[in-house]
Image 1 (cartoon, rainbow, N blue to C red):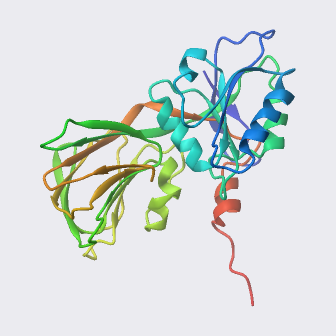
Image 2: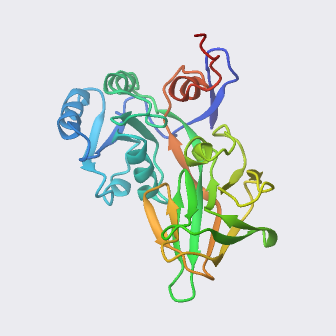
Length: 304
């Protein structure tokens, strides 16, 4: 059931609560740490100890193995890492999406917006309550080739076709719901969710979408034309990208973490997944906070 969460002067975000929690049951959490981050193992163990009186820690592991999470049925997954770690966890959960709270051990923390003290305070406040979360669209991406079986993966932020070595321009045919949109010559193409619009898409000159927007962003990478501009299509659309001419190193990249080779004649189909990332956001924060504070959006130029 949706519930409005106040955002200090902006229109409320729509969040959801997990059903079925009774007032006398502890919140069940699973802790996941990125072992590549300094001090994560130490902090993960300390957090599990400190939270024991308030919540039930049903398991603790690393990003390398998420197979046990679904079977333990936690109410919440707490991820210690950065945005990349959170993206990896969301993809790894697949069809079994569980609300995720990200604790930032990285640089930006656009999605993982808690620090360790904030997440402790937040979790200790959830006595007998379920965490609120916002839903973020994900892409279901299928790569089809003549010589290999179709491969399907989730992408939280984006699906990017990169020209790759030897870095000659490639030619891509883009269809939306089966209808030819364009044949594009350039360095590649980005298909982005609203959540991912502030990632590679933004760097390539694409538009910023609010996380709740209903659309998929199509952004050409360095097109050899003045007429190919970023485009937003309906969230219900199926976008198919066929490689008409490519390089030996042309790849499809999902969230910058999963790379699949793309050969001439291969096709990439992307659509909104029926599954949604369930992202816990810090209570009381304006929805513009991260955009303004992390990326500096809308700030006036400084006088010299």
